[in-house]
Length: 126
Image (cartoon, rainbow, N blue to C red; front, side):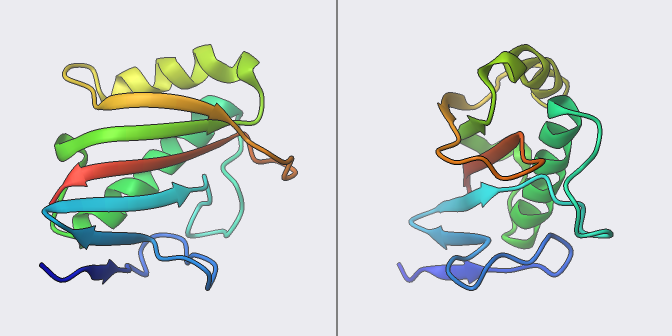
């Protein structure tokens, strides 16, 4: 099965070194997605919960471009700048996945990027 590069102009444009997502083997692999508001090009204001919501809105747009949806998410990796934001991120996460959430793991951002609190990568069924 060939792989397909997924791109939608509705979501923030990725750097030239990676794709928004790749569809292969019946899955959609969404790259680590920043909380960038496509309308402004800036990180979402309002803290880690607001940035989590923006990451998930961006992922939703990318999955839809691939013919998938958040309902088909099977795995996610959430990367935080500050572990103290976990409760706020988790609370927002539960508004998007109140039942049957995808498998999830967490990590810490390796370097500080001013204003960036959260990044999320996701795998979903195609």
